[in-house]
Length: 220
Image (tube, rainbow, N blue to C red):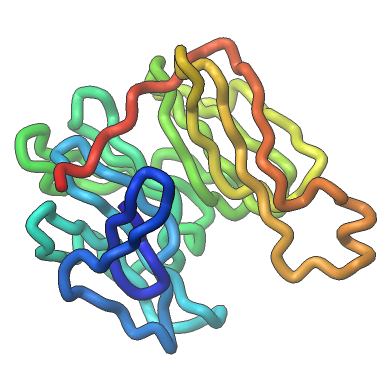
């Protein structure tokens, strides 16, 4: 399941044979899709950002398996990380422009969003995120060289320091879901920046001592 620059698509497991899913599109001259993942109800959710800073409001969209698309969160500055609790009653969402991660109450049967509140303010720019098997939230903080773990109560308890500044996201993998893979970027880096951070843009891995959870799947 793919969120391309302006549309949704399906591909084979090797990434080949990409084909469009549904007719929904965003204005590619202004917006592009950013972070996304399947939800517990078999849908695929992905949000947008603008190509230029200070552009018009963005949104978070839900793609149904049959191709219908609806906006579920509007007036977003820069849509980023998202995940759902194991009991399907909480939805975590990072609007990077707000400097923190919010949590929505969710209907466990339908996924409909309810009350929204601030879960944690990161003191920086939150990027991608994932929950672990203990319900704690791992948040990549852009331009900080850090991946941070927050307990279900919103307390910071672990910091993974990386040798690169632009930390973008994290996901658990491996046979036992015990390995945490961390993606990074090198956006707008100069040759001098790359000499200082030669591993910028690489994927890193660590074993934090707590596993992740099986991923939710798109019900295509």
